[in-house]
Length: 163
Image (cartoon, rainbow, N blue to C red; front, top):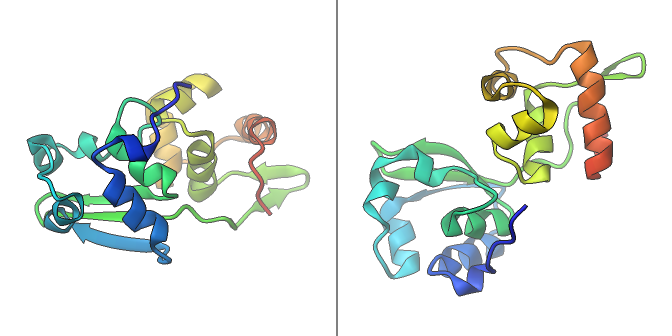
């Protein structure tokens, strides 16, 4: 994984500081509020492209700022010019069938975020298609038992703890 510059080296440092100092688990900011924090305009793509707000682990200084502050973008409402940031949960509802962890949407997403991977990168890591990751994370489908075993091994290797 490529190392990102520290948020202090970026124009998004004020957003990083604001989020880092926030004690809220979730907060919604308007694009205007974010621009006020930055004392600068966001690029046009921030107003028109959902992808600009993706939680990428590399190549995006803005994502580096909120992710290093401990947040992920969870809701993008460009029509309302609002972005919702949330701290990933620490305790997850973990269900087991015998010694097999039954992976659910929240747990899959939390593991992926813990590993700092995009859905596409996580899919490559697991040997599945990106739409499969999306379907797991939205709860459209749950991983099969054999995949649950793989997810458990990957989680252990990544140092991902859950109760």
